[in-house]
Image 1 (tube, one colour):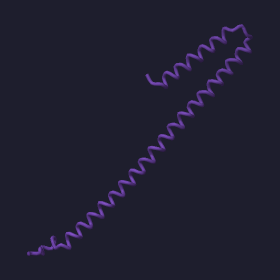
Image 2 (tube, one colour):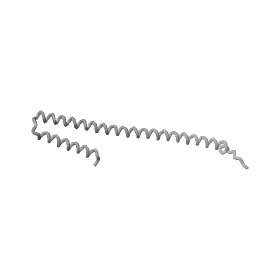
Image 3 (tube, one colour):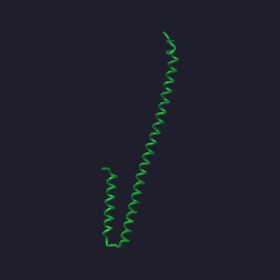
Image 4 (cartoon, one colour):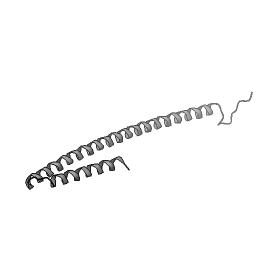
Length: 107
């Protein structure tokens, strides 16, 4: 079971218990309704805070992965250019040796 499900279930259980406790209290109806609204506002604030924390964490991880990917692409491009340069140099050396022209030196 995931942590988020446990937290959500705990919050729901706590909310239901708090509301039930308020509803069965010997207060006037107007006071009870105000208490329910206040508790509801508290839970919404807490939920918003948790969502913001989750959102920030997700954004940070996404940005980190994006940065890592960009660095990997740059390294790949640099490696490609190095291999391309080495291949051109090797081909040039091969041509200068006369290997491609059929002019092999015989000693």
